[in-house]
Image (cartoon, rainbow, N blue to C red; front, side, top):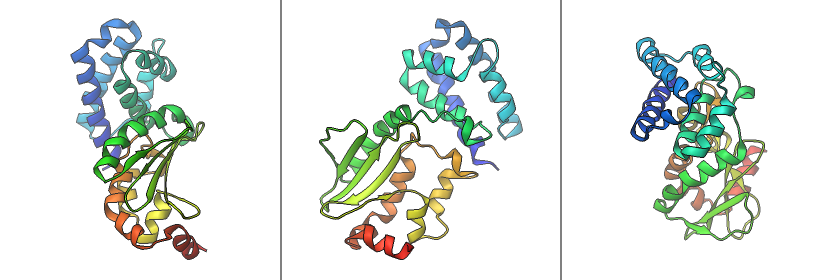
Length: 229
């Protein structure tokens, strides 16, 4: 079964619960229509046990509604709804080209979602004068760098204080330890362009499994790049 079905089901339930608790749908006619159609789509989703990209995109693009229109409205009333909507919209697109990449917006959510996870993993926030970069460091000098790519989705890099270079935490790095990249595929399947760039869940899972291995390599950037040559 397509992993997107389970994620969409949870996201819609969370979205509708947030809306109903705060009665946001009463404040905008177009949003109210979107809620009504989203509720109907939720019933269809549970019955079919699979997502319907065509039907969802009809919901977002009818009766004066559009992804941009909803995004702007939600941004003004509730940030948590923006994050849910972006993810829900993106996993219902046929190709990466039709997704809302909104680098700065996704970066904002990534930074928020990463904070607690990194602190729990023993990292502390580093001061930075650059708005497009947020960095955390641990006692071993391992630095996790969150990077705003602006026009492209944000990325998470790993480097070590006192050493040259960095590596992106993504499928290629995981393949150094596990050629099957089981963790990555669990978060990115069935197609890589459904990867949730606003979430820190994949990066947290990667660090929990491989941070000690990277630390023990010393200059892990050079070691891993030499193997890749």
